[in-house]
Amino acid sequence: MSVHTLYIYLRAGITIVATLIILAISSIIVPLLVILSLGLLRNLVIEYYGPLLGRSILALAGVRLKIVQAGEKVQGQAVYISNHSSTLDMFIIIGLGLPRVRFVAKYELLYNPFFFILGKVTDQIFIKRDESEKAIAVLKKAHQYIKKNRLSLYVAPEGTRKHAGVVGPFKKGAFRMALDLGYPIVPIFFEGARDLCEGGSLIVKPGEVIARFHSPIDTSDWTLETLDAHIEEIRKQYIEWEKQASAKKK
Image 1: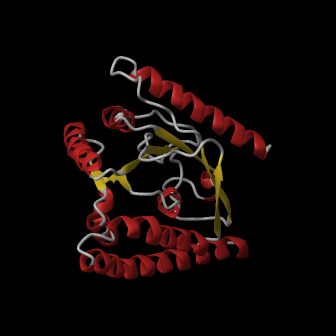
Image 2: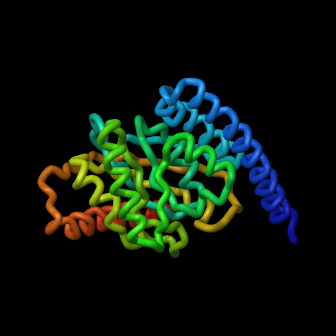
């Protein structure tokens, strides 16, 4: 094993331990803030403490997060979506500080005690991706909660990060929620995340990740009959952004 390889693994180990410590501390601070405020600070915790948490973990790994507004800024509530190809994506999303947002995440995260505490106390939405009926039931319940409290939603339509560096198939959940809620969709494209850390890996290379916010997509004229066509159109745009990002590396 070379010195460089040893350094990479040593840095990864230190980052993982430090991340667990930060999550453990946050699992105490966040519940206290939410409980003592009778839930009134829940959105502020997500919007302001979330970026502190996400960016701190990224910084430990040597990752710089740059936010670029590549289109018009959304006004009001929205369904945010992004590509999903890196283990870093979770911390990038948290680090963005999206206003009044709830995240749709895989149910398996609840097996981690820190994510269980943080997710439950901040009312995040966890679904079992392999059990479509239960996932639909959870999303229907979430629809009522989101609408009633005038919240935004974040979903990664690819569902999984373990694909070979391409834009995977889009699941309908995010788009059906946008249709039902009457919300615009805000596409976010993560550039550089997979280059620093592939999906399923815990080895992170230092570098920069760019989160590009594109113009909101109006869904007011969408119907169930046209939903598939709209999904495919948006996916094609992500494929084009991926091609543009890949071309920059050459």
